[in-house]
Amino acid sequence: MAEAMDTYTPTGARKNIYNLIRGVVSNHTTIQIASSPDEAVVVVSKDDWNAMQEYIELLENGVIDEVNTRMADAKAHPDTAFGDPL
Image 1 (cartoon, rainbow, N blue to C red):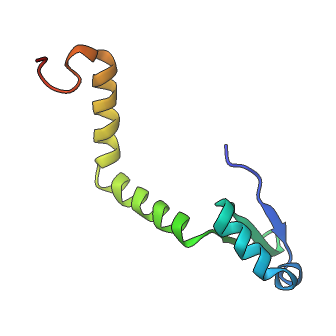
Image 2 (cartoon, rainbow, N blue to C red; image 1 turned 135 degrees about the vertical axis):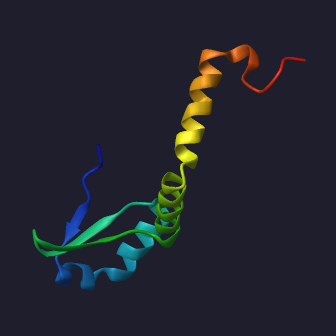
């Protein structure tokens, strides 16, 4: 389950934008800026955004499924998880 985000009004965010940006970047947190429940944006750090995009790409290309399959095989067969035993 996702953690609750701190939410700011546009005015509140504008008053404290520098500290909000520093917090998002240094703590890898997210914040929401909302003028109403249906009109909001989420602010994430560029590093976190890039990581999410990479994960989505790996998921779309089947790499995550392959990793999960290999991990399950390794748990089921720990003696040969890394190939033939020496």
